Image (cartoon, rainbow, N blue to C red; front, top):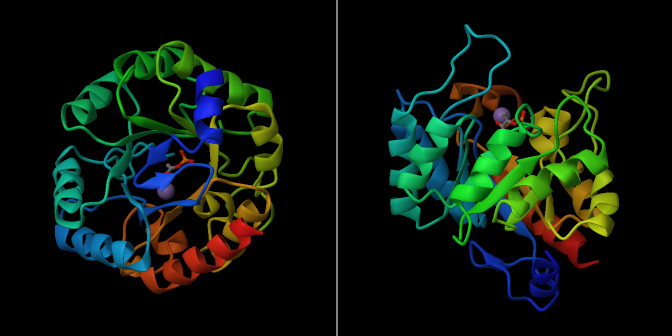
Length: 269
Ligand code: PEP
Ligand code: MN
C-alpha cells in the first residue's frame, strides 16, 4: 500500500490513459444498459467519448430496491464489450456476486464496480482482491449504504488490497437519510477526509449523490473542489428513453462536455 502511495505520487499509476492524481479521470455512461436497445448504448458511448470521458460505464446486473424492477441481464455485457470495441474506451460494470465476477473477468472488463449495497460484503471484497491480484483490473468501491463511516470505507478497501489488488478507487455516492428533494445526502465533502487517510484514489459519483440531472454538475464541481481524483457520472444520449436511474439523473453528452471542462478547471485550482 505504501507502494501504491509512492506510485501515485511519482505519476506511475495510469488508468484509462490518465495519470491518477496528476489529472482528473472521467467515467461516464448509462446507469443501466437496455438489452432491447443496443444502439442507444452505442450512440451514447460514441458521444461520451467525443465529450472527453476516459472510460465507459454501463450497468449489466442491477441492485434494484424492488425484486420486481428490472434486474439486469447478462446479454447487456455483450453490448458493453461491443461499445469498448467501437470506441476504444475501457469499461466499468458492477458485479454483485462471484458468478458475475467470473463472467466479467473472462471478458477482461477493465474496472469492476462494487456498489453501495455490497460495499461491506467482506467475502465478495476479498474474492475480488484475490482474483484480480497482480492484474491491471481496477476496482471502483462505492461508499457503503446507508452511511458508512470514513473508517469503514477505508477498511473495506483494505479487504481488497490485503487479498492482492490495491488498484482501488473509493467512491462517495451520497448517504441516507436523504436530503429533502435529493436522492441521497450529498457527501462530496468526505473526499478530503478520505484522501488524507488513504492510499486509494477517490472519485465522486454526483449522479447517485443528488439523483437529479439538473443538480449533477454542481455536485461534480463540489467533488473537484474537495480534491477528488475524478468523477463517475451517468450520461445518456436520450435520458427519457433510458431505463434504471437514467430518466431521472443521467446528463446528456452536451452537459457532460461542459462538466468535464469545468471540472478540469476546478481540479487544477
Ligand atoms: C450505480 O452505479 O448505478 C449504482 C447502483 O450505484 P450505487 O451502488 O452507488 O447505488
Ligand atoms: Mn444508477
